[in-house]
Every structure is written in structure tokens, then in C-alpha cells.
Length: 49
Image 1 (spheres, helix red, strand yellow):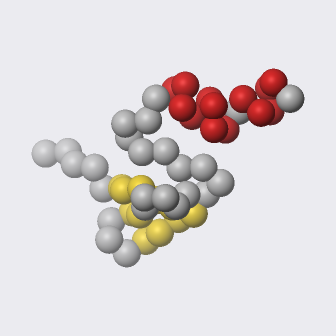
Image 2: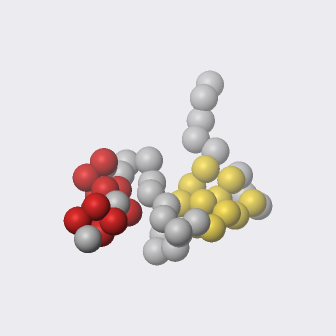
């Protein structure tokens, strides 16, 4: 009986834990994000210059 207990706030770099705890980060990706999307948004500029 596992379930996902986190959610991503749409349009914001914020993760909700349960219903009452919010955490903000530089980047946040939802569970269905792909590795290429994460690389493009977080690392490409650091590596390519």
C-alpha cells in the first residue's frame, strides 16, 4: 500500500510534503520528468559554458 506523499507546485520550484509542509529549491522536477529535461534545465549551461 505505497503511495506518493509529495507533490510539486505547478510553476514554482516547490515541493509539498503531505498537505502542510512546503520546501523551495532552485529546481524541482515532478516524478514524470525525463533525464534530458533535467540536464537541459540544470546542467547544460554549466557544462557547455
